[in-house]
Image (cartoon, rainbow, N blue to C red; front, side):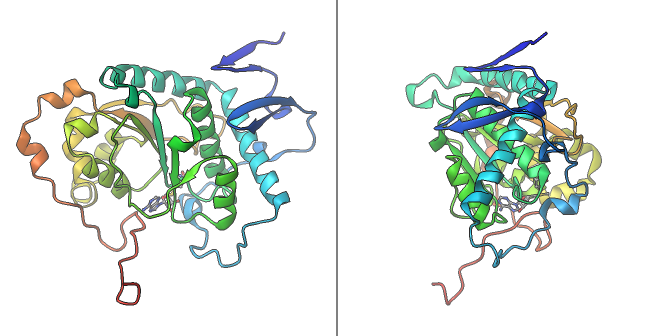
Length: 313
Ligand SMILES: C[S@@+](CC[C@H](N)C(=O)[O-])C[C@H]1O[C@@H](n2cnc3c(N)ncnc32)[C@H](O)[C@@H]1O
């Protein structure tokens, strides 16, 4: 029996995922059914340890951008991740909850220019060398397709991206953020921030940059559970590195994403966070007014932008 999954305009028979490949041209997925051969990359275990998540050299001096063949192969591996996700109960649950979240906040986005959702992705990691990051990029492509987000509204940044990864993202039609904005992007319209396993300071900076009811109600964060941070991280550290997370906790609506994907260390500890206007309305003005820009110690979990030096000025 062949069931059919309908995702937006995409129709996929639920044959085993390793037999299916998703080709994409100009934002459209095209289904290609292939014979299974060998093990395939989608089946390999992702890198396990946390330090593997960002263990690649920062300068990437040896990376010349990669051959076209390597690029094609990388794109194929990313698309395989997307297909595997699309077939999964994990993605169904995540996209259902994301849809509900968007529905719950969209009444504030009825003006024409705000109809379209934007997606910003920070800290996805080195997807050319790390399977965890590759699946997360696969997820971004699934969300882009399902929520019909135009390519020019998809923005990614990770200071660790190699030249090959930048070329790949360009080929996939994603916009690269060209400066290290340290997560301080204002959400002028409804924006999904995909920030899987990012350091606390990135979330903290994002909240700081949107520290107004008008802006914060535009923000949806798919990332590490704020509740779990509060439960598991000592209060002193939260105060030092994530004071805005602590302050906003009483007003956030958090929906945990069920971690039932076949690999359990790719989307673990993930929640969808939003800040509904009705929660923010009750807040007094002084709450918003006292908002100094965060400063972090050198060893905090964020790569800060390089300060302008005399030579560069
Ligand atoms: C713990 S790793 C997570 C990588 C991947 N998402 C995962 O789950 O394995 C944190 C990531 O945040 C990135 N990062 C650090 N500072 C950043 C900044 N200022 N802007 C965007 N990403 C940043 C790092 O380069 C790294 O890839």
